[in-house]
Image (cartoon, rainbow, N blue to C red; front, side, top):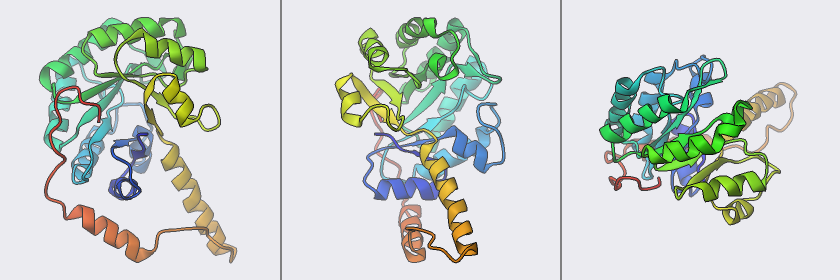
Length: 257
């Protein structure tokens, strides 16, 4: 289970909750910066967050959308920046701004460039056919081609049912990542279908945002705001992880974060 953080405090809290790795959510990073998700506008914010999260004692994998609009050279340079920032992996999607999909050959060029420049990064190749509801019949072809290009894992969010999940898991020998969808499958069921990694995506961010608004409304209405970390707890948690001066142990190429 890979929970997704949107700032340092959320990442630290997830580590303290016992998670062995943390990812980032592009929606959370973009929304926190006052920008739309998926439009390639938060490159600087993403790198900055990766540097902050590298202080955590667990591997961190970073959602870079579709590479922030760059070609192979630019995306390879981005990957090297992530290595320098202390990241263990990255998530690279084949969707493009405006709800379109990249041509598979174009995405293969990006994947190959990243692996050539930064082989130590675990490259999770995201296939957005089902997520966008576009060219769903090309899903398997994309999965296979991205695997052949050097991806270390494949991520296919929005798969409709158990049959589709099993088919993708059986199509390649790489670890399959899916998006957690409340009420659809349990963690155990997904594991039985061959899933190796389950991302929470933007769910924790959206729940936290909703809870924050509810707390403010409760204060206005003299109602209970619900459970919350205490001020000293947040202060101690943030300080403890902020004072770390080492990054997670370097992982061998292709090691699942």
